[in-house]
Length: 196
View 1 (tube, rainbow, N blue to C red):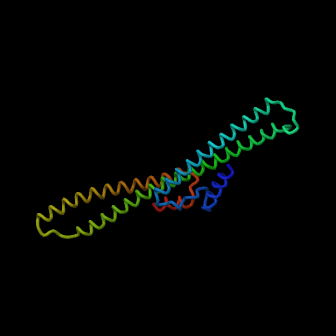
View 2: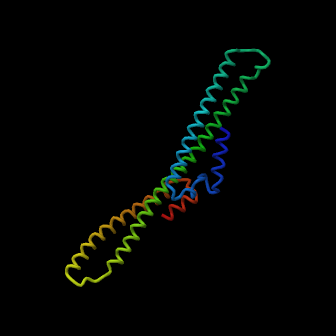
View 3: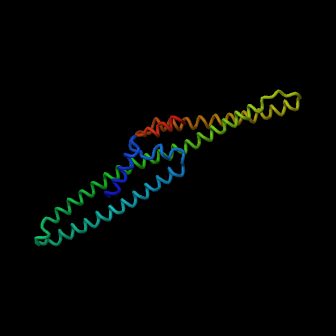
């Protein structure tokens, strides 16, 4: 448990900005953000299973000491020491669970932000394509057929612009919602959301 605590502490202090160590490091990389979250979950499960096993064995040892009522000099005070160790381990486990929860929340925010960045980049691509289409269609028709064709293209173009506008507004609302509702965002996370 001590190694896991050190890993969490090191990860949290490595960013220098709040409790979310990977924030900023994974921005724009969906696979890495999701991989870090999965690794954290797997590691947490392993730590919790190990802590449960240790605490269970400690309880068994305490029960054996209590039931043996041995007066052997070697065993005197053992019950109190085992009980103290069990309480310390239990407290350490609760502290680690709290730290792990903070890290999990930060990693989940990273995943949400990265997905939002991908959406925003797609919208920007659509906007650039729309601008290129608009520039390409800046011609005056010389015949009625060309005018009809240009009007049809304009109708399709207008639908594409409306969809792009709706997608841009949706990305903006998602980013604003995360900024307003998410407590404890790190500086890189806030910056990524502001950039969106």
